[in-house]
Image (tube, rainbow, N blue to C red; front, side):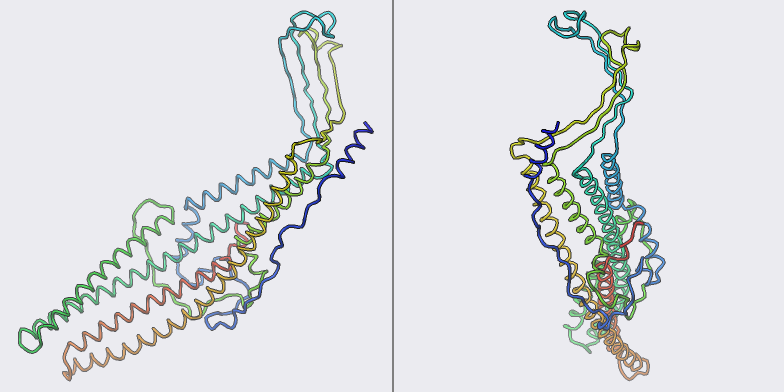
Length: 464
């Protein structure tokens, strides 16, 4: 026994050490969002940030999606599966108690050591109601495997939050797009009506010999384009409605109710964006837990080079022949250590360790990549907010100017100073400018959603 322990310690000393793996990015250049005129600095992004729009229809749709989307349900099932694997893995740290029994009919050898049963066929019974096995885990191999399973469960939980984040983002942006499409279609329908009136007016002027023929022809061409755009907007509206129904996990083609969402002047975002804030993103959290999982598995692969010691104990009955099984002489017991000493594995242990080392580096590189992508996404979102707000303000100013132009044209027509045609053309230009403003408003809402999503979307602690 002493020789075995000496040999075990000698071989353990030959186990390779874990090399220093790929370096983790541990800092990023902080971004100051408080200098962005489109940002209202806040302490942190609130849970359910979209409630800042004060749109009950939007709140209701996000809640419905969280309850019925199949992709999110699938992610929840993966989380439950990971939790079950972690629980199963944790059982390896405790003693295992079993009950083992066997009965077999066997021809015994004439040269055996079974005395009177040599050369005969007998029933051999073993009944061990108590069989205890405990792995001492001296080198913490099982502990590292359990820690890896726990890290995997936490990574899956973060991925679940990421699924919820991306789902909410998709629902919010699709809702904004659908609401905008409805408003655009309504305005385009008014443009079609005005264009029809303009065309009829120019036709009458041409027949009266007041206008040349090319003007009503050009007006009819514009009318065709307006009708084609209206059809495209109706198609866009229906497509977005179907997309939103799918995100809600429904199969019916019901029309989704939308309201006019208020457009905020500024949106609340933390004034300083650093690594601590980025670490609240679910995808960054998942990548970091994957790194920790890989580190634990690498340590477990190293511990496999050391000897493994199990303690076992059993008590029960065994007998050749059923009649004597429970008699006074049938009782038996055993206990002691069992040592598993790796001597020659044909390179299997080295290969497994190198595999775990490469997996760790892969997890680190994935984390670094996701972290860098997060920095870029936030920078892009902040830039889109800044310039999206500027473009929206310019479009709003342009709408105000067209409103003034239309008001002047209306007054001139009503007072008889000018004809109806300039008034109709001014109305058409105004409506087109309103549509352009709506598109910029949609882009502004998109930029807000992208910024909130890039910051973790309020799902950093969800589910609890």
